[in-house]
Each structure stands twice: as structure tokens, then as C-alpha cells.
Amino acid sequence: MRQPCVLLKYGELALKGRNKHRFEDRLVHNVRRAMEGVGGPVRIRRRRGVLVLTLPERPDLEAQAGPLGDPLQAAVVARAREIIGVSVVQPGLRVDKTPEDAAAAALDLARAAVPDRVPAGFAVRPRRRSKDFPLTSEQLGAHVGAAVYTELGWPVDLTRPEVEITVEVDQREIFVTAERIKGLGGLPVGCSGRALALLSGGYDSPVAAHRAMRRGLSVDFVHFTGAPLTGPSSAYKAYALARRLARFEGGARLWLIPLGKAQKALATAGAGSLQVVAQRRLMMRTASELARRHGAEALITGDSLGQVSSQTLANLATVEEAATLPLLRPLLAWDKEEIMAEAARLGTAEISKLADEDCCSLLMPPSVATRTTPGQLAKLEHRLGEMAETVDNLLAGARLLPVEPGWEDTPEPRPLRAAS
Image (cartoon, rainbow, N blue to C red; front, top):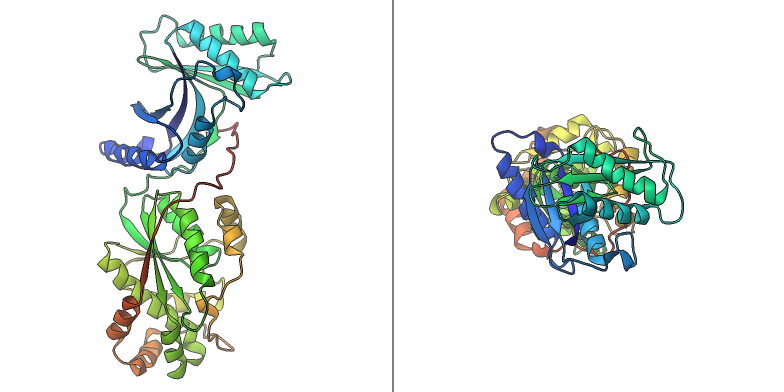
């Protein structure tokens, strides 16, 4: 037996107690969904503290191109890196349960890891989940290490090895790996409920949505456009962002709601410096009702305290008063540099920097009030008439777009030497 595999190690999930199985079930569901359409059959097996993804056997594996000779394995690794709940991703080989097969696999993986030079040092990290193996962990490590040292002449470095080979003995097989790739960690998406994220075209809201996903929330999106006063560019941008974020949860829903007429009505009613806060309150009311109708239990925004004039403490409180569901602000204490760095890491920054016609900048007053109260806004809103009717009219114009994850631009996996 010589079978490509990918080991998915748990992070925070491993610390759960009696209900751990519920989190594991959700993770398995998410992994299965992420592997749909990957390009070949992938079997998911549960082991203690690890999920094993096995691929079709490849007897000619070492003769093929690529780090491990299997493009399907590379595609599986790329997707596994973006599954929330997975702490470490380890591509490798599944072989028969013998010391000789483990040593042969270790040699092939070592050659692939450093194909054209002698590394500064290597180490073998053995582990036995099955104690009926004839060798102890130390003996197995010594056997595999001796094969690599004898065949390749590599120096041993058990403290800070450049190449680290893991040999994990299980009930029926041995898993051998020589690469550790950092996963996203967190809790599996879906184990904490469902929320609705207000998705703008900027850097903040996509990062906030992702942070919520890492706490186990399934996230749908709503984007308010300036239509009919603006073109469709912001809607295209919101869809691209939602598609990128859908990779972390396997799919999502995006609602597009034209806000232009309501914004103009607020301006006509004399909103003045209250315009921005007033339209944000209207977004909160509308998003709360949309979430209620579709089973979401909270709202998510990309607010960062003091980042812009509409995000002062007083204005945040005034806006939140209009929401009828809990309002989550994962980025409240983040600064812009931190947010942009995270957006770059997630792959949303390149989309966010594209030009569009943002509804938030539509009818922008010369100055924005920084210390508003709910009472001030209530007077303005009263001039518009019944707010429930306004919300219903906005939702009547909403357009629903199912969002499937886009995998075609998946970056190459990066090795992580310090993962544990």
C-alpha cells in the first residue's frame, strides 16, 4: 500500500469536553463540503484528534512531478488550509504498518522536501496511537532516522531541524509526513449558530465576517447599494468578496438591497450632519428584519472604534439602538493597519481596493455629527413616516444571490516549521 494522504490536526476543538463529538461532526461535514469538486475521490477517516483524508493509491508516486507527485493531493491541501477548525495540515503518505515501509516513505518524502541540497539538519518525530506495534516510539524513530542518515547523509538535529519527518502509527497503517502547514484554527463553522454580516466594499467588514466564522458562526451577507442613484459596481464587488469568504464556510447567501431612494428621503427630510448615522440606523433595522426572516441570530459589522467620525462611541450606541438583534463587532479594538494586514492574508484586500460607488459616501454631508443620541435620530425618522413600512419596502426590493466558493485562485500552501 502506498497512498497519498493529508492529515488534519485539531486546534481549539481538541480542548472540548463531553460535547466534543458535536464539534467533530460539524468539522467532518465542513471538510466533506470543501472537498466537493476537488478533482478526484477523497475519503475522510476519523482518528483520535486527527482527520485523515486519503486519496487513490499511486504506486508510481515518486516518479511524478510536484512535491509529492500528486496534483490531487496539492488541491486537497490548498482547500484544507482554508477550513476553519483545522490547526495543522500535513500532506504525506499512508503505508503498510511495518518499519520498512515507514522508512521507505520517509526517504521519498525527505528527497522531495529538499531535492537538490543537504539540509542543515533533520529529525524524526515518531508517535504510536496503536501500542501493538513491535517497536517502541524511540526504536521506530531510530530505525527511520538511520535509513535517512545512511541513504542521504543528512545531519541529525533534534532541536531545530530544517526537515521534520513525522511517523504516526495507527491501528491499521502508518502515516508519514515531512511538511507542516498552518491551518486557520478556531471552531468549525456552523457550531455556534448563524449570523448576518453587513458587507460593504471596504477592508473592514470582510475581515469582521471571517473573525465571526472562526468562532463557529455560519455567516450570510447583506450589501446595501446606492441604486438607483449609483451603478452596479458595488454589487459586483460585494459578490466577489462574498465568494472569497464563502471558501471558509463552503457557501453562503448574499442579499443586495437598493438604499438610494431611502437615503435621498433622509436628506430631503433635513438629515444634514445626521445623514450617515441615520442611514446606518436604517441599515440596522432592515438587516435585523432580514436576519429574523431567514434564521440568523445576530448581526455583524466591521466597526472599529474611532476609525471614522461615524464610529465614535456615541454614534455606535445610537446605531446599535436601532438593531433588534445582538450586534457583533469583532474589530472594535483593531486599528486600520491590523485590519488591512488581515485582509491581505485572507485574500480580500485585492478586491476591497477596487473602485466602486459606495452607498455610504452617497449624499455625504460636509460634516458628520460625532455625538448623536437616539432621540435626535428618532425625530428625523419620524419625518419619514412609519419605519416598519420603509423597512418592508427595502426588503421588497432585495435580491438574493446564492454564493458558491471560488477555488480557482487558491494560493500555493506555505510550509510552517513551528506548527505543533
